[in-house]
Length: 220
Ligand SMILES: [Zn+2]
Image (cartoon, rainbow, N blue to C red; front, top):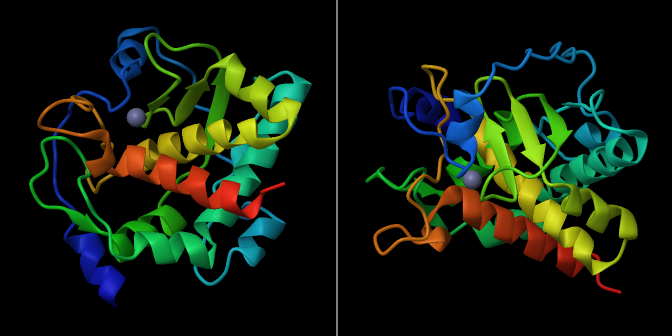
């Protein structure tokens, strides 16, 4: 019930600049074909069950990735879902009060944010490549995430550097969440400025938190 009322209270917003630095470039470029939406009957697989009550793990279309990158993305997807579902992630997010965008005045609290992360991230698709002035970029309208090749290489090399992909993927997933008008809810245009520090923003905080929690659980 709490969450039902929260859904109704999601802020309304019009078309705006996308969050990631390269997002506007994506919109300005040629439109990308919308991927076939993975079936609801084929959610994230075993991790959906492991993730706990109410969690929906987004599926990923990896059809445009070469085999090694596709494998990396599938593994990282499960790792981020598992991290979001962990008690430690919930504990560390609980007291948070963050900004959805640099222009939002009303903060979102940790429990409400956790609900969004566990239930409102749609299925998506991924291509590899370096977005302009960014590690990755997301277009919430097409649900396409572009991630630089280095992140896949770091994942496939194994070891602690895998955490960079966790951070990037968790960050980009936040940009997939839509408001009730179908626009991106969580953005970071104008970030890293005097009036909008990265640590106050949902996208950056969630990326950093996912990385920290994942790393703590994967110490060697
Ligand atoms: Zn971003």
